[in-house]
Length: 152
Image (tube, rainbow, N blue to C red; front, top):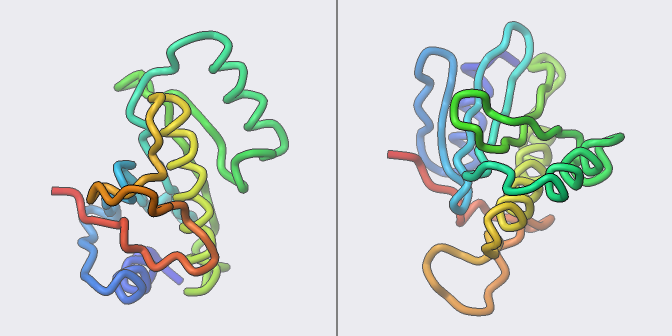
């Protein structure tokens, strides 16, 4: 699968057209911005967690979560040198992705990003944006991407 096919499969999965701009695509899951970018024969997923790491103790927690991908589902944390924000990132080889695997990876990625966005900002990023109280927006096996929105 090439990047154009990845974007097409995601568009079909989400039910609306994603735009491939210079081999990258942006959208939001909840309040977490996600960038997909072609990187040769790989696809890079990056989620900006929206804030700098506020203290050394939390930074140590990020590093511990990175170790053997214990709390990242195959992704890793990094600091964006341009914004100073913490970010979640994942590489995958496009030629081994199929639609089911891509959906699974994106679900895991979104769940990890939303969890850690809440940890770093002190907000519960797993709650829906529409203000409905008590409804859990966590990504699960039956995730239907209802918290996914295109970035403007």
